[in-house]
Amino acid sequence: MGERAAANSDEAVAQEFWRDLRRNTQARIGLGRTGDALPTTEVLALRAAHAAARDAVHVPLDVDIFAEQIASMGLGDPVTVTSMAADRSEYLRRPDLGRQPADLSAIENHGADIGFVLADGLSPRALTDHGAGLLAALAGELTDRYTLAPPVIATQARVALGDHIAEAMGVRTVLVIIGERPGLSVADSLGIYLTHAPRPGRADAERNCISNIHPPDGLTYADAARVVAGLVAGARKLGRSGVDLKDTSRIDALTGSETRTITPREAPTP
Image (tube, rainbow, N blue to C red; front, side, top):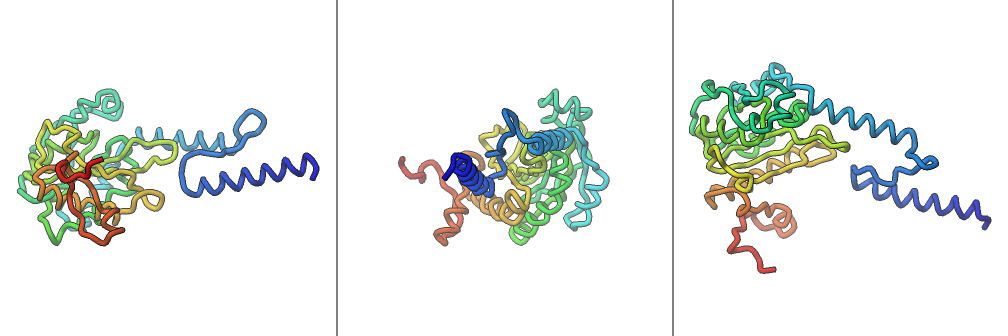
């Protein structure tokens, strides 16, 4: 075999190796090269992904259209609130303002078991693309077991704003559905932050997070809802959420056992 043929064979093996890996990740790996640079198609794809991520952060949520979608789900007319950040620019520069409410007087105290806060976060696009579908899956999983308060839509919102909203709603557990920080692989990913017995001042260690929700490439709505249902049940049994509450749904799926919570005392010794 000549040197050129051997080189072509090695290149074919390398390309097949990287193709197999790319099937299992959205990361930019094995992109190849043209001389000392990336191929033009990959450079253009990177620029397009960067532009999509920037747009996801800066383009505001169309509240009127989104509120109509949520109202049509039959969970009650949504109330819209905003943080103390006046616009997207101030929201990005002042995270502290995104955690404080401007006015919560429109929220009624329903005393329900669970409250939903639909927050734009760092990707309003994620809420537009996936918010209604995810809320429908959560309601379908939870409505037979718990009372649900009408949803609240929050703009210029950080996660901790949900604690103030939940206190005004009088709910036992709050689920903050929020747009996650966009990356160069995903610009429309949602996260759910669960806080049991919410009140202003709760620390991040007192919450549970289910992230990377963006079907078809990320976690599906149904899978996220099942995890949430297990965590809600565990939080009510344990009396708190956060680092003491563990999701065991993957283990349970393999063993056929029921989802339960693991407290530090129960955790296996390393």
